Length: 158
Image (cartoon, rainbow, N blue to C red; front, side):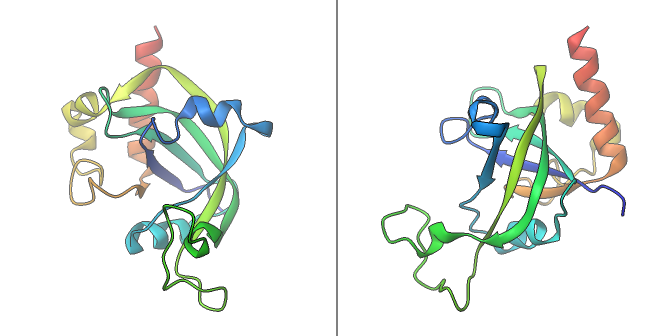
């Protein structure tokens, strides 16, 4: 089965690529997604898929590195915890509404591929990040988009 590519956003104050890198086994669950389309994308993820780790709502938004999906979607218990800021009383153990996946740090780019750099690339003009789903926290990335961003990351490392 071919690897699929994704982009997963997090505000660095909440959870950054550095935070993930510092976790035991460089692995953590990706919880708190409360958008149906983003949740459905997570449900489509398979073990071994790769994702760009994107920092949003910060001084320099952009792709900061690569993560791997190491556990496909499963019920997000934060939705059922009244003490958690991701709590959703509609979600129950019998009918969970929200899912999460486990991700593992793969690599951090020497310099981020910024949103402004992405928007300047003609090959990325139709990317969901630039077009219709710009606010989604989880979205698919095509192989062409993946390779273009990797090339930009390598150019920044020279």
